[in-house]
Length: 406
Image (cartoon, rainbow, N blue to C red; front, side):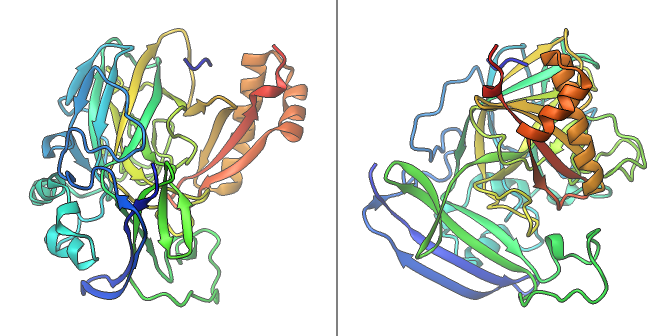
């Protein structure tokens, strides 16, 4: 593979809300010194709501997050593309977090009830919410996904290269959810055993986390004495799949639910797929049909509560079709590593798949024997649990580029 200031003033709001009752359980507000969060005065600018410290790159195309461009919890294979573009062109895509967009309660009431100011609620959220009653739900998940984008010339068997040129936050807040029986503590989680104690967390707890610029870098203001560096990435990067009933997330013919990732990419939740990284996906449908969404402001490996900082983001991508390559599942690379992914319902199987992908890559791309490839995988490659909460689980093998002298 080849890949092509200052201190700011903001508020910290950590809101804990009981789901279903929609009342504010806890709000903590702390003032921080200096100037306002960049862009806060125009939160509903859906074409240029940029909150990153640097100016995003120009793009050949723009796809806004208007209702007709959004999908709720699946990847349609026969939807009219929201954009047709040439291979090698760039596109800027607005995405929406599901927070505030999918619940039954009207979004302004819901989000202001969490402590989010009215002028920080994107109009796109209100417009999407108004269309939810007419959207099919059977077999679908909860993500709000932008697409599809048709890339001219892409055919099944090709590879779609996705260069992530930039990722910016659209609003200065995100939401993380925790519950006593959520994420890895769910009773349906494979590692659950009868008698495992539940955490002491009120049902439906939501944590609203402010984000902003401090000394030239974006951070999440987790509390008055904890700041987490922001590292925004899209949890979902996908091509249209070839869904078959019985596969993970496919219970309705032709409908791939967005919760489990798979060979088509999807809800990978690999935090390293941020700006400066290139992702490669196998193509299953004519035009590839690229989808993107599930923006995350920051996430730890594992995403153990079941959510990250769920945040509306804008991404700029270069999409290129390759007809001289063939891969069976998602892979990526950045300046320092080749990243090979193993995906399976079982975490142990996912680890085996990841090691096999690394070995195959080293044999095919670097000319090693299988014995030498497995040896190098054991002494130089890090295998990380990228996510464990999306039904299928992802283990990523990070091959350091600097071990190769040529």
